[in-house]
Picture 1 (spheres, rainbow, N blue to C red):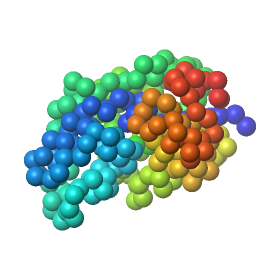
Picture 2: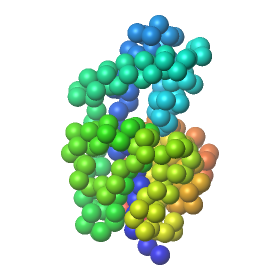
Picture 3: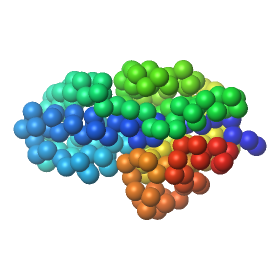
Length: 215
């Protein structure tokens, strides 16, 4: 059975959001007078929603109101920084064009909220390539829970054997495995090759166009 659907992560897989994510996070933590996380820590947690990762990175227990304020400050700074620093990875537009020509449906499951995800995809000029986008607000359970993938399978009448999950973080691979779909880890994002290979993806690729050879 051939591949009919590909599900992409966004941050670190389609879009290079490392700089704006780090800058916005550090600004938000600073304004809340919290210990500022280092770049390596922030980058590691980019694969899961900030509602969860900020609690992990904070040096004290945050109240519901404190977390809400921290998230609001972060989102404000992120929107400012993304205008200058958010970029599409080299090879992604070419890859998506080829996949469209081959009739393979593409989707995104992200830890971002859906409206922000769609804004980012539009800003990078690649929104039209995706049949559906699933943000953190469309699921009850966050990555690595498979809910985002199972929603796409159901909504588009796809079988597990026809679908692959592509991502740069171990959370993405674990989500794909939990959903029972194929998994492809990519070399150009936040987690190291060693960490990614450690969770056993079906494929590991060094460049976006290498994905074609795995289909």
